[in-house]
Amino acid sequence: MPFVQLADGELHYQLDGPADAPVLVLSNSLGTDLHMWDIQIPAFTRHFRVLRCDTRGHGKSLVTPGPYSIEQLGRDVLALLDALGIHRAHFCGLSMGGLIGQWLGINAGARLQRLVVCNTAAKIGTPEVWDPRIETVLRDGAAAMVALRDASIARWFTADFAAANPHQAQQITDMLANTSPEGYAANCAAVRDADFRAQLASIKVPTLVIAGTEDAVTPPAGGHFIQNHVKGAEYAEFYAAHLSNVQAGAAFSDRVIEFLLAH
Image (cartoon, rainbow, N blue to C red):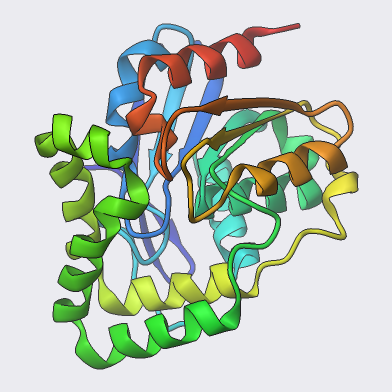
C-alpha cells in the first residue's frame, strides 16, 4: 500500500496504468476515497498513468486537526507530484476535488497540462449550510457519518439510478460512513471557505467543466459560471446528480479522454 510522507503525516495514493504514459491525477469528492474513480480506471489506464490519492482527512490518508483549506489540499497534491518526480500532469477533480483543481489552475498552472473540474463551483454553499453540519459531525461522530450516508444517496444519485444500481450506490455512500468525522469536518470547512469567483480568469490551462443535469449540490449554473470565466473552457453536461462520474459512467470517461487527448 503506497504512501508519501508529508511534513505532518502520510498521504495514501494509488498508481495504475503504463509507466510511460502521461499522468492523470484524480481527486475525490468530500466524503469519498480514491475508489470513487474505480469505474473510470479501465478506460483511463488505456491512455494514462492514473494517480489517485485519498485527500487529507479521507480514506487511509493522514487526519490532522482542522480546519483545512483548499490551498492546503492543493499543496498536498503538489507534494505528492514532487515526491513521485512528476513535473506536469493532467488533473481531474470532482466537487471538492474540483475546488482543488481550480486552486491548482490559479496558483500552479505550470504544473498542469489540462484541467477537468466536475460537479463543482467557484463557491459551494454558504456558512449557513456548512457550519451546522460541521458542528453535528464533531458532536455526534460516527453516528453523524452514518446519518449523512443515508441522506447522501438522494444528493449523489438520481432516484432512478439508485433504484436500478443499489449495490453500486451503497458502495459509494458507504465511503462516507467510513470517513473520519474529524477529517470530514475539517474538509467541510475547506469547502465552506473556498471562493474562486474573482480568480477564475487567471486559469490559463485548457479546461473542461462537467456538470450533472440533476445535481442539486452544485447545479449546472455553477459549471456555466466557471466556463464563462475561464477563457476557452469547454462544457459538458450529463444526466446525473452529484457524482456524474459514477452515474454517467462510460459517457463521462469518454468525454474526459476526448478532451485530454485533444491537441
